[in-house]
Image (cartoon, rainbow, N blue to C red; front, side):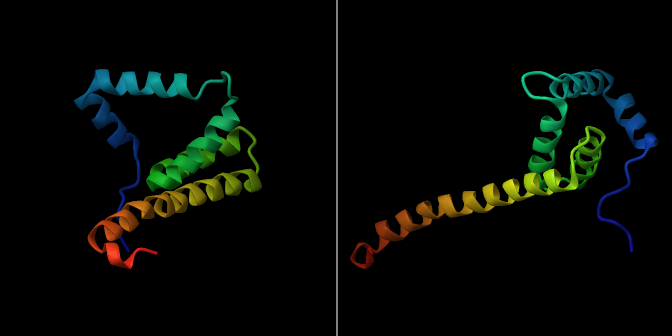
Length: 114
């Protein structure tokens, strides 16, 4: 079965760099700066990235940042807890935004307010 997402290859990375070399280099430099030790250690930043990757649903990011978190000695339990935080935030967003639907319902059917 073919995958929906192509396997990342050095040929694709090279093509991307050839097509837009300045943007490619700028992105690499930006990424390096973002994930460097700072107020937050690299491990924490990678755990955040794993969580965000699950919210954005990027399979490349999930794979890459999970590998990077493991390289920074994150445990399987820490990685899974980060994923659960992302899960709660995603579900929490839907829950919080239900107020928009309820407000619309209440505006259109004022006699059915509860």
